[in-house]
Image (tube, rainbow, N blue to C red; front, top):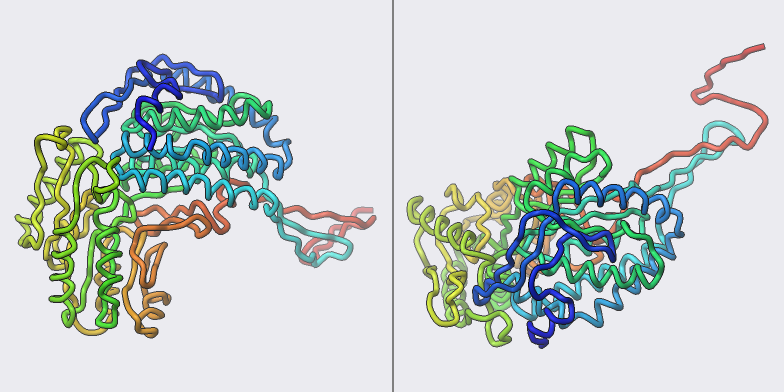
Amino acid sequence: MKSIDELLEKYELNGETDGCSTGSIWFSSGDKIESFSPVNGNLIGTVRSGSKSDFEKIIKSSKDAFKQFRQIPAPKRGELVRQFGNKLREEKELLGTLVSYEMGKSFQEGLGEVQEMIDICDFAVGLSRQLHGFTMHSERPTHRMYEQYHPLGIVGIISAFNFPVAVWSWNVALAWVCGNVTIWKPSEKTPLCSLVCQKIIGEVFRENNIPEGVSCLINGDYKIGEMLSQSRDIPLVSATGSTRMGKIVAEKVGARLGKTLLELGGNNAIIVTPDADLKMTIMGTVFGAVGTCGQRCTSTRRLIVHEDIYKSVKESLVKAYNQIKIGDPLDSGNHVGPLIDTNAVESYKNAITKVNEQGGSWLVEGGILEGGEYSSGCYVKPAIAEVTHSLEIVHEETFAPILYLIKYKGDVQNAIDIQNEVDQGLSSAIMTNNLKESELFLSHWGSDCGIANVNIGTSGAEIGGAFGGEKDTGGGRESGSDAWKVYMRRQTNTINFSSELPLAQGIKFDIN
């Protein structure tokens, strides 16, 4: 593991740093953003945010860059992304350390997030030679029809603190090979991670004589997000965050008939049937519920267990939770690090209060850890509440390590109905060795989520499969399959290679 001081020195993050960039050029004229580590409460660095004039400067640079970048052949753009992936391999340990220190996830998860960046680069490189169109037969003789895809232009990216580098990479790697340029507004809670990413890609583009404006960065608060959403120069806005935020973005972008890619809230469940492997169930549940201190959009929020095995699952969960080590995420001996900040701690406390008020009971009690290594005030105890599925709090996304344990009776369809009754529809899982149950879960009348897993937990999506969910999750898809199409505009072409002009549908229009 690299030291924080080594990292800050290499990337020149000591002191006050400009938070806006068009590639290699850095500037800013807005307010200061101070980045405090939730690990120990220390100030890591200060970033100057962007202003309206900075945003306008970035827009102009992006528009100019797009005119040149779109003319580079897609495989050549893929080569740029390949080089970016190689740079990330070189910087994996340093960037992973920063992710862990600034966001608070474990060092292994920090490394895993950078690996996701590398993986999406590999995926995008292959994709750069597979941006296929589609040829079809025309009803008119000596005519040919086909569809092709063109880049949209500027893609705006709004990312969240919990994956401060991966979500950006999912979008830009695909957007760039498709021929787009990008403007990134990262979370104001993790600005330093964005600076390092921009410095790395800036080096790649500089070495290849790519113009300023292909990869742009603007740090700031929600006002920057509003600028991105309202700008008619940005045909697509990809936004990751809360459902509340996503609805605002969708409304603003929709008002100008722009496109959105939304990755929003999750309230994910694991169904455990009598035919489940108990050891696998407990492992998948615990990681899903406490990994990243419960701050993944795919975190396990609900565990829906059949009454016949409820007691044994409950006992095993308590035993597992008693083994969880909480502390400095850079220490590989710990399983759980801190929440992102004290505001997140307040949300955690409010959820506990609501459980108590609504009649839930605690199987494993939560609480705030204080003093010593917990001096940042961001460390909390993972908790398990026994509840009925009808409680109001169970239907909300609690972005913290609180797991709701729910008992179901009868057929597995009853469990699926409980799972599907919440407004969110991101990730889901079933633990069973029963073929009929697993296939029912994956059927049209099974899970209503964008992700449905069998015998693995709700967390751990990998590059290649389209990532995203339904309902209040927003409907967007990223990082795999044909997700690249959202970054493109589709065009239908008809070519007449005759000297005649027949009309479609047999229409006659003769002029002497």
